[in-house]
Length: 371
Image (cartoon, rainbow, N blue to C red; front, side, top):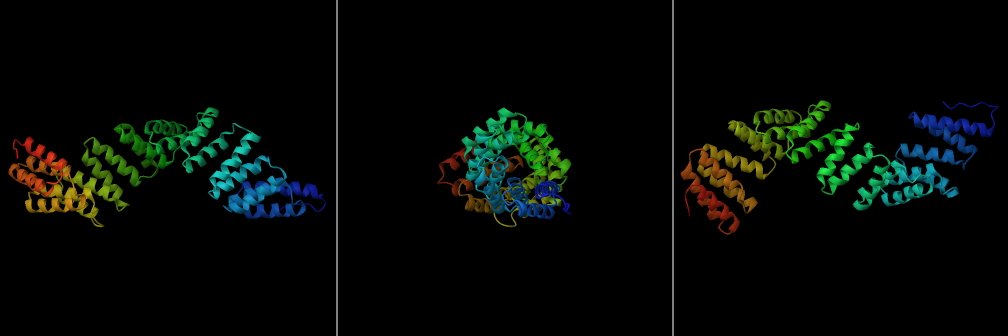
């Protein structure tokens, strides 16, 4: 409720209404805040403090164009008004007019506080969004010089390094941001995957488990943690994690292929086949199809092996990986003659590919046979 006294002067009414408006805005009571500002503006239509308040209120409602109008009214009378410059920059950002926002924020830096870390970071973020990566780095480093422990600066730098392919600097800055209090599960998952990429399975596990502490069924973390155990040979633990992920998620073809591979390595061939077929339910997927090929090799279904490999080549055109893996399974299963026949079959299918022929002949050579 807007409070006023009948005996107060217009000036004191404006002051009181302005204070009420800002306090209500801060409390999130936007309708009441607007009523207070509008009543005050009826008394002083050009009051910059009231106009800025209305701009802030409109920005809170994500009415960015209307907010910009209020800020511009202030700046028409005082082109260096600090809060109007900040608000206008944020409103332009809300409208995705990033280059204009950058110019407004630069005006603020030049007119007021050149080392304002929040404005420097905003400019850097906008340049990053525009893919102006060298400019983004320049402003992030300026902000970093102001406070090297600011979590938003660290995250901004980390994202920029990751985008530009500098994984290790990105990892360093993400970890520092997390140490500074960042708990966002997306960031934790990124760090887990970066550690996994560089085969640091212990640290990867730690960060995926941090995610699962917040969201026990987070599919990305369950998938990532399962990959940690997969890479260290603990297929049973991988299966448990991936099965848990599938309780709340249909699963991607990639996850289903890895689950099928884990089942296969554990000797659970029926479960492996079910996972691969589920991964193929919506169309061809190389890894699920290759999984089925390997199942046929384990079961010794030679005609199915040949049919599957021909179909795989129909999609892949040339293959040097799965022919070797399928043949190795046949050899390890004691089916050396079938392995040799399969290799010769694959040679005929890929006789136009010098690379494939070389790989297959090397596989044959390792069996003690030569073509």
